[in-house]
Length: 121
Image (cartoon, rainbow, N blue to C red):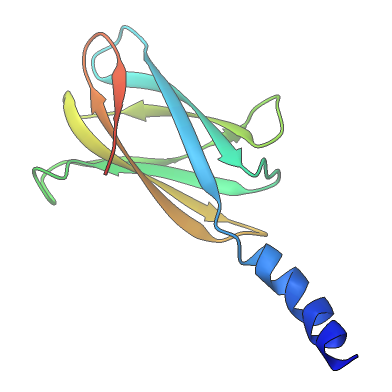
């Protein structure tokens, strides 16, 4: 009987502690170093505030992008942001989540003048 009570109490905690994951797709806009990005959270959380920033791992503190606030998209867990980078190259994109969930997700991409390729880190 005791273990049922413990399991009932810990069950919701472990579900809340589950880490949020994100996928991001970016498209070159045609303007110098400007990309429109779609962020998809897994699980698809709504009502989350996301601030998107980026820096170049190869040049720490040399190139930091001013953070922008992502706007909710049409689908659950979908958000949109426009990145205005300093140059092409590999960038670490930082997604700061706040609200019902607080987290920091770092995604690595190679941004070029023709497109964007995810990098595994």
